[in-house]
Length: 258
Image 1 (cartoon, rainbow, N blue to C red):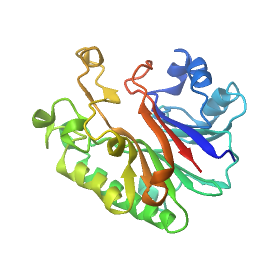
Image 2 (tube, rainbow, N blue to C red; image 1 turned 135 degrees about the vertical axis):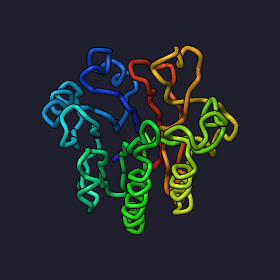
Image 3 (spheres, rainbow, N blue to C red; image 1 turned 180 degrees about the vertical axis):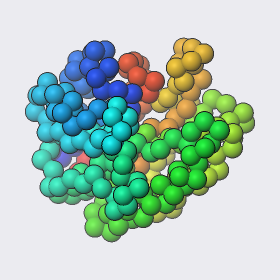
Image 4 (cartoon, rainbow, N blue to C red; image 1 turned 120 degrees about the horizontal axis):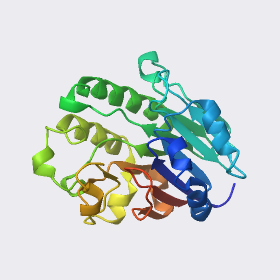
């Protein structure tokens, strides 16, 4: 494995649609060692077809039972030791929201965290999902350092969304339940590497597709790289690639020396 790894994470809001928007050219230009995708909205066969046109990558996929919904994928150049798509609780493994990839020196966890939904109808489920996933990841971190990435569907601090007062405890992604769930990761030994590096920078990763939100930059930072504290000092760079279009999210990147 190379001494330095470049990892890209992106909620593509449908991988088939993204292929038609220049996905291969974007990935070639970004030249990542590992690409983590959320919301593939596709089964394993579709992800395999996409991987066939990404030269040099092995593909891993986790699909929802419900067709055309949710789903995660990882395209990796470094050879993994193993990978896992089950968290140990069947209720939480029906939507293809997690892939854990074990490498020699670390675990990579790619997550697409459930949205709490309109009128917060799914907030109780979200709380349960967060608690279960945190226990799962605490088990991993006892064995090896962990890089956690993906669409975590929460803005952690007021600086992470354009309208914090209007959205607090009213909108999915900015309730105290979800904020506390995120804080649990930090208390478990993770570092939000972007916010540590840029404590006051206002930059978003998601924009509602309505109301010209991206054009007006009325957005949310809900896509992250969280890194085990023991390897946080190995992070060389991290960025929000908000000039890349094609989805209602933009990619985020991490370069780490491992």
